[in-house]
Amino acid sequence: MGAEVEADSLGDEWKGYVVRIAGGNDKQGFPMKQGVLTNSRVRLLLSKGHSCYRPRRTGERKRKSVRGCIVDGNLSVLALVIVKKGDNEIPGLTDGSVPRRLGPKRASKIRKLFNLSKEDDVRQYVIKRALPLKEGKTKQRFKAPKIQRLITPVTIQVLFV
Image (tube, rainbow, N blue to C red; front, side, top):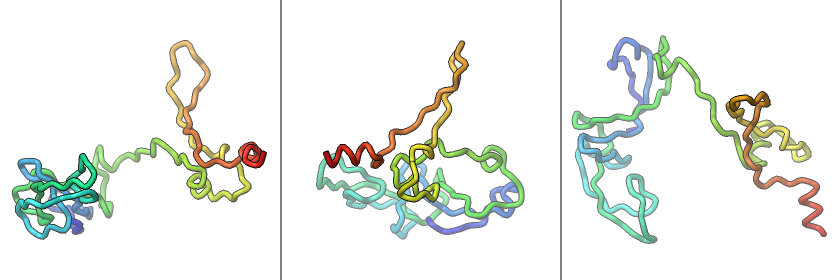
């Protein structure tokens, strides 16, 4: 896991691509865990903060079977991340880009995204999403998040009254 590999062996359409191995599962569905330097299955005592485990109670630990981070023939799924694009497009994977569905909600993140100063009004720069038109309606409707940590002259006036 974490190794960058040339993807030429996957077929002609993958010529020139470089992928990073991000994880995977073996034939029985046990996940690969980073840092377990073996290609077989091991039983580890996992607690809060470990991958492959979500505790149900505070302080709970559980012994779970996980797969080592070394790739071998017993894996059924291998998760790959494209690091470098190759010569040609792969249909359904690299031929189109999907825009982010939601913009930032916090005022400071919007300021950082659009390079705004403290004096600029953040509300004009909120990323809105156009909703599909309903039957018989002509006005386009938009959906926008409620901006958090927004400081306006009205909120300052309320604080000092």
